[in-house]
Structure formats: C-alpha cells, structure tokens
View 1 (cartoon, rainbow, N blue to C red):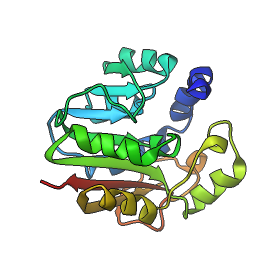
View 2: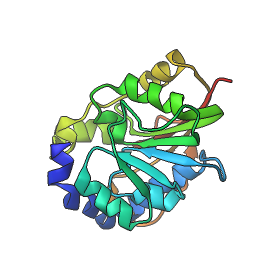
View 3: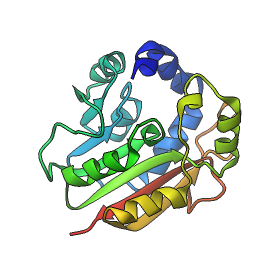
View 4: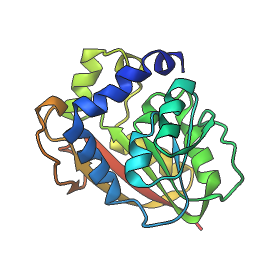
Length: 206
C-alpha cells in the first residue's frame, strides 16, 4: 500500500508513456468482458482500466491512487481485496488486472471475488505471465514496482481458480514486444504462451 501511495504518479504516468501497450491490454480484456452488467475492479489503482472498460465500481488500499480513479468517474472505496465491503452476489463481473501479483493473500482475494459475484458471473484476471518473455524480463529488472511482485503463470492461476469454483475458462493474450517498442494497438490472440499479458476469464459455478 505504501509503495503505491508513494509512487502513484509514476504508476499512472506509465500508462500515458506506454499508451499502445496499455490499450492493447484493454483490448484483450474487452474480448472476455461481459457486455453490460454491474462491474467491480479489485485493485482499481488510478482507474485507467475501469474507466476504459466501463466498470463503475473500484476498490484499492491506496488513497492517492483512488483520488485519480474518482476523477475518472469511478465509484471508489478504500479497501483491500481480501475483505471486500460488498454483499454476496453484488456484481455481474469482477476484474483483477495486474493486482493479483501484488496482494498478500491471492487466494483470499479470488475467494472474495467469487463471493461478490452473482451466480454465473464472470471473473477476469489480467496478468503478466511469469513464463513469458516479459515476465522473465520484469523478474530480472526488479523495478520499483515489480521487485515486490509475486508473478504467476497462467496454469498456476487457473489451478487456483478451479480450486475455488470457477470453470469455463477463456484466454486472450497480447503484448508481443516490449511495451516501449509497441507503436499501435495489438490485435489480441486467443490462448496464451506468446504474449506477455494474458487476460483470463472464468465463470462462477451456479
């Protein structure tokens, strides 16, 4: 929390500096995102993804990040993902974009996402794939943010999701070059294994 409160401007600036990488990630998530419905982003940060995706609600433990998100039109609450301030079955979909690699208890966050999802609702998790060229690069680079991250492979995350009751998985990948080299929005590709960023969609069992 202190990390993102301290470097919130640097965090938000990355998306402006790497505009096409960011928009490529948005495009991949849109392939899985339900059309319409009440949505929540866990780890909403400065609201970059929520605002682009039309997600109305967001939670984050960083006050400074939430000020940005609120200015982008998101209904925000100060909260960690491990204990969401919402009733059971409150949302049609939940997104967790990059955030899962920074939380202390990823399974608890995923369980909370499931709890607040309606029956048949969808969870969309976006990750930097640990096994991708980009995942390996970030693990070695040890940036101010990623030196604190716990990276996951797609298979590891899907194993978590299956164990807590998600099924019918969908995958879209993007970021096929380093973010600062991308000069147009990439077309998302089904599956995973080539792209640095993978959007994973799973349905909550009825």
